[in-house]
Image (cartoon, rainbow, N blue to C red; front, side, top):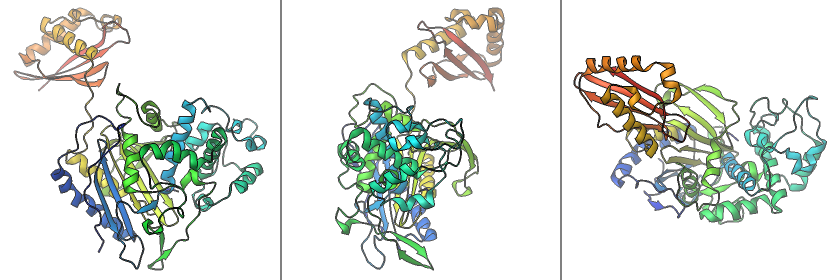
Length: 501
């Protein structure tokens, strides 16, 4: 599970429930409306090139759905347009619900990520491991796809309707390994189906029912679920594959034991609530924590297993660059050269393809669902985010300046004014690294070069303990940096000044 047209849904600015992050208001509607044409164009171009019958996308910013559009049709040969209420299967984007369920149960003391998975699924106890020194599979290995299983997208996609009794028999029969657990990341739908079984076993509830009650219902996701035959069929976007220059209807798969790896069906008007809830976990703060999972736990979804790789970004996104990325907990975390930290996952399934991309440091996310096999619209989603960043609509949030950092900055100003670093509270390393006389000489030399400086520029925080600043001077600029030592009392382990022309 990896990864003309009818304009059906209008601009929306629906407010998020009470647990949404306190943040600046969404940009003016005119600004978003101006971007809507450009963003829609990216998805329209993708649909034409990828032969997609229908697609819906949404942009979430600061706890609101600020843009949603339906394109194309829910059923070929009909005039039923895709809308924000059309229901799509989102395939492997379902794994995010499974991972957060495991973390919530960990918080409740019902399981441990470091425990062997066989503690919660007894059928695994008789498994034969590939080597005599293989560690037992841990719950965390299943989360990170490091259990040693073979990549199984072609096979795993078709296991969705497997019955629980058949899954139990499969578990008892054992699993051949591609490598020993913990060697490397290899994507496994089977592993996430195992996590679903763990949820069922430790809660005493069917996995799908537990997710619906504990994650979806609290978020108001009323049209989201696993059984595609249970809801109104006229609301479903039917799935197709492109074959022999025509759309061929993909058979629907019933809900089953592999639902934890890819069974969710949802709509844009539901899914944005999930995206908004996840984004609301950033930044860390003291506000009331009212979501179904604590903010601190939600932020764990970006913590990977350190099996990082580098890939080349496609030229269609601008200047090609290398992107380091790693698989975390049902999310891939990427450091992009334009967007910074990107948290993303795709979904590919018979009849469907999807993508979701979060910029947690900006409070912005985008998602898209399509009704063509493996049509993951990640390219237009990334193009849209880059366009939003360039338009100033997805800036990285500025960090607050802590009281301690303000005090450190004041100490730096005092040292500069006096021409003596020792006028600031210095940590023990400072005079050992460079003696006080030489530091005084350094300050004097810079002052002689740049002249008088206005020290009114704000400090730019790197963290609550460290920051940089730039002062405008008579004959140039001074760039500086302060960093507190890891002591309760204010001590500077870094105090630096340098001249710039």
